[in-house]
Length: 368
Ligand SMILES: [Mg+2]
Image (cartoon, rainbow, N blue to C red; front, side):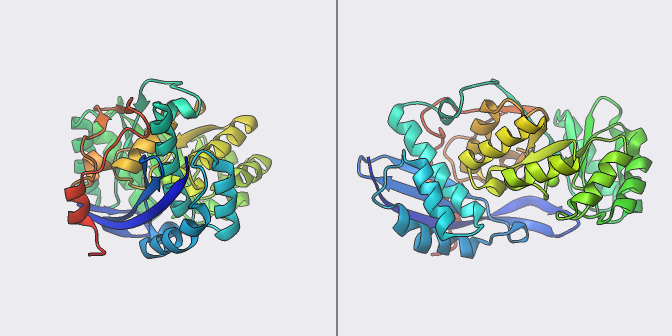
């Protein structure tokens, strides 16, 4: 089997509500759908879930896929993953979202060709069901407590609170939410680097320790592993590195500096399923448990995330895979993924197990 062509389709879908971190407020999401064609008629689907503030824009991703990746993979077998990954790494520094989108489509093709779901190609169903958390964005404290209460009423058992806007606001918001939702719902907090320096992170985390926090993500700047180590040593809440960990080399650096207790890993940050498996394996060797994060993927990217989450053993915390049925107005797949109140199961049909709704692709593509 040979790859004969690929295309990149830019998509934009509005959110059901604005979602803010300390860095930005998002009201719509931008994606690139990747379609890879083969000489045997099998078409693979992938998705680059681009976010500019996380390193790659939709426009540059469409260019990278069409103009740089397309010529170096056409003619190659979709099964020759390592060759294709090496060529993409040689041609493009970074651009992890584009690489992840293309590689996802190759896994879809391989699964369809051998009649197996993607999780069976990466180790098999280690777990049947993936627990998920849902997030509360940053706004005023009263709206955040209403939001958390709505999530609890949906049946959510783990709520992630975005923080990092200002330490005092965060302390007030986390206490208010804990008071409103009671003790049985777990809480994660994520500062997305917003507390900046160790001293402020330690102050805030010590002040919310009485709220029974499962873990705190990325308290300080992404490059400040010494600061992360200082926080990890000083507080009782487990610290998860997120913006600080993109590849296996970051896992080694974090391990050497004891800069976190947990790692938050993503298909989009690592550059796809294979590369994120390398991150997870390196983490396993270093003794880290991981949490699978999401970039707000649509149905294709979410399916890939779920296949990964089903197959990888050291993903031991609720995954942030809540976007399509909760925060997006619509999706571009024909059948929704199998979400329940607190978790999701992987499609069992060959490949990623999702199909494109062509009418919706036409409706939401922005290159018409
Ligand atoms: Mg995070």
